[in-house]
Length: 178
Image 1 (cartoon, helix red, strand yellow):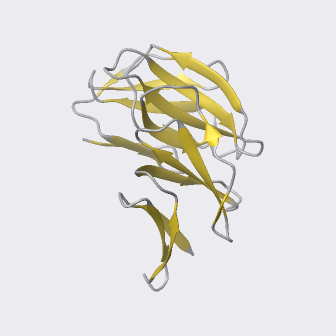
Image 2: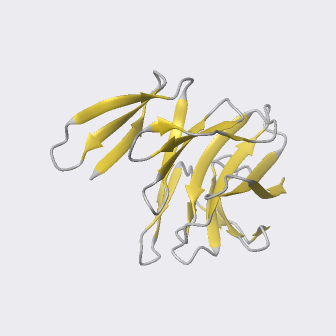
Image 3: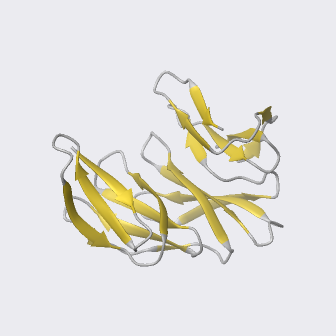
């Protein structure tokens, strides 16, 4: 019953979801911007906006694991783990926003997988419950782009004014924060 929250002071904080008490800080350094927990509750993956590293926290001991080093690029935008527990995805871009990339990684081995480039200007990302489609927020083009994960192929964009973040409920309803 623990939530993990990133903070701009280089820490990840644990919050007990029953008592709302803040637990000890986990120092991950830098400026963490996003965090996801694997389906087994054994690893947390911490994304930094301006780093080519995804820091891994081994749970429940809260010790730092071996980081995942992404190919050089300027800005990490969003991270999501497929509900099937096998693959994670990171959206990234260069600065100024010239190249846009979505890269996959294996959750267990932390090895990098396939990437796809230049089809959207993606930021936040959510994955449907059967782990077949990612939905990537594209605030510059006022759209959400579905991506078929098996082939890393983008679909037709969904026009949404000023999208900021995205979530998908277990029943498949997509929620977009604007």
